[in-house]
Length: 617
Image (cartoon, rainbow, N blue to C red; front, side, top):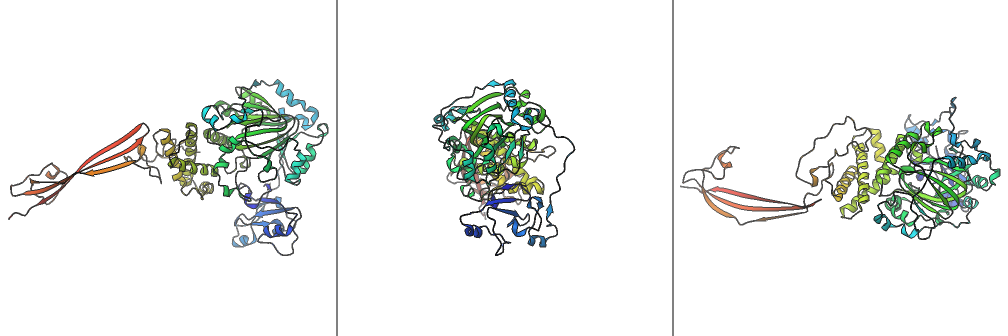
């Protein structure tokens, strides 16, 4: 169960009972009341002064004020499944259920040896710096760039662009906006509302803390370091749609590449809409904070600007071996007592200070230490230059059972939007760099696997997959995925295989599935027939015919024709009186089409003969 400060439509689709906290408009309570009425509202019911809780019926999906439908003494946080009164009357299956009481395990939970921090007390704050000083760390060789050089031309010119982290020491030329350096955490709390909930991490246990608001966090943050009871950290305050967001503009290169910015429909990002809000984060780290090894969700890239303070990054390159080591380590007992750096080939250290900006590419494993209080703005973005690795990270998240609330929101729906847009561009013969074509091929293969779920999966899987297809853009998911795969391979100059190509790729359990028979045909490029999609056969077809010629031929008409009939020969045989007039017309058809290596032309000549016999007296 989660608490969100958004309109009902924006609550995450993964929750069972969805709860909503909405800030009331204190300046205009009457207008707010009119706009926020629910089906169960009655006249004369007092409106809360500050917050309003909402609950959604799990059957009809209609939202209600909890104050309008609550049973006396029942807490919303105790509800597991909830149904409105009309739905309860319709079916006995619609029963309100409560969550089971929390079970306390008698088994002692392991504590990370390297994250103990003496239960968070700052007297042991030097443990982190000691750990960093004793670990085997290599100096980074990451490029330092001018902001003006981080652009589209850089992506085309440098094959290593967006494959290694990049440090921009000064923000000039990046095309981004940031708040003034004088901004304080107290001012952030005032702008967003002191009662706004915020996710706070206890650094010692690396676990989340509940019950924190921005007002409480600001009070803690501005407490002198020596008087803080524990080390805490905030790394996931998303600020889209707030006054603070108006002061933050991501770097130009990020806006040009970001899938959400480019492909998610603008009319579906408005107030109350549900969309991937991951572009604008405010991070508030206190001295000696530590964020453990992780990869950003779905392998998304990150831009990271230090407004105040300092950060120390540790990086592990996302090689296949290192990603495999991370997958074994993440979510296992190893995570509590094993330093990930001992399982990989190299750990690189980068120190960032105020004014620095870093762009972290897809899949880089990293941990972050905060040597002094820091205020950071950043965000996540998916792009078309390394989709294969983005999908690999998603596979790791699934394998390590990362909860859905910590994954990239609406990832599959966003992927369909991206696919539909690239399909239109490829139909229009638009050119793309090789890296982008390879990425889109990976995306198409992934979406073909999603289409197979729609076509062959069980009913539950079909329903889940269907809900992730944006019907406003994608009418036939299977056709879109397969045509995109065919067109991108054609653009790469690779013959398009049929449905069996990479059958096991991105497919959960392909073993034991019978192969489909392939239809042999000379139609279409590559000879493969895709379900719901027929590629164009020929670029040009021209037919011409010659004049009709007539001749007289001795031939005896037959009552029946058969495969071995003499009429299958060039000429028939007969008596002198058995003569036929034969009309011949020659038709020449020329068909041409482009191929990956040049041109293919078929020239077909056909002769049409018409035989008729004169009547002889």
